[in-house]
Length: 417
Image 1 (cartoon, rainbow, N blue to C red):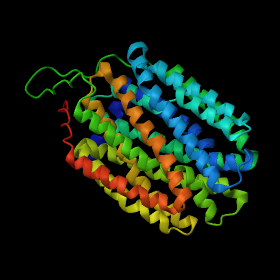
Image 2 (image 1 turned 120 degrees about the vertical axis):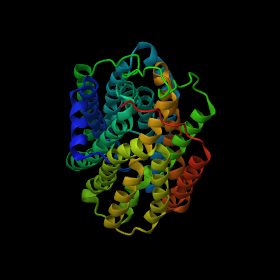
Image 3 (image 1 turned 45 degrees about the horizontal axis):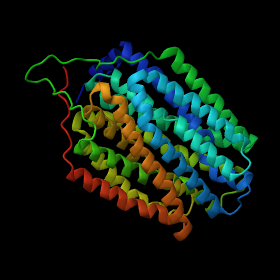
Image 4 (image 1 turned 135 degrees about the horizontal axis):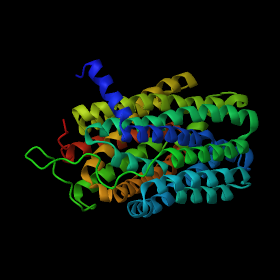
């Protein structure tokens, strides 16, 4: 274990390095972007119910699931395209495209009058966005290998930090000014994040930040092909994890509503429930990033998957918001460590020149999970009730854990001292 003084020295050294300052600026922009994403979008089921003329809760949930699925499918189709363009024309340009494009699409949602119009705007949003993939690609090219897990953990902490702040602020804002105003405010926040990246983040180098001299202990360069069996296995695992993560999202606001909470502050209550998951995930992403650097990606993933498999079905037993808050906090710790470990493995398996395309494939996996999860989750809720969704995700987490043990993960590159 590192002594506190040594750990502090490494943090200071990273902060003083050019790549550390760039990652810091990207971290802030990612927090701001995630605040924007979670400012209004979690309340889409309530927006459909109260503003777009669909009062029935189950029908509103189906609409929300369909919109989430359409968004994810479009983003998955465009992910490899944007990844290839990033490798050719620059990674920073792709981050700018994602931020400014999302601002335009989500801002226009305040003008929607029917569910069909909102569905079209979600499709447009999916074709333009992809902030996480674009930002992660940049970070993977800037950070030395020995800091990779920690850096990716910090970036996922940014996701959860913004995802925890956004619903609280968005819920308060929506209760005070309405859902339409919340979508308009979201656009302003996205434009601010895009301006931050434009002004403070340089284009990453085309090569790895640290080049190992040849020798017996030097890591082997990763193969150039992107369709190798082990890479496909990692991408499939990512898709399954995303599926189980997001399946309950479209119906979570309705689950809170069924607990008998008053309508006057419903958005604030939903925002708080979403926020506690984000806070727990943020802390977990930071801790698990360092754990995966020290003890390996497979062990980190396995512990997180098994914990999620145990905690997920317990949601079905919750009868009050306080019980749900406790469960969402616990499962947030499990969910927070998954994606940084998967992304670290993918980074180690792909050469820098193909990194954008590789993360484009990961975007496809995320899109498959993000699309199938809400659609099937809302369908299960319509057929068997909302609690059944949480029960149905447990076998998926267990299957992911079994698959992880069956797949031979690549060894981490040897770290430079």
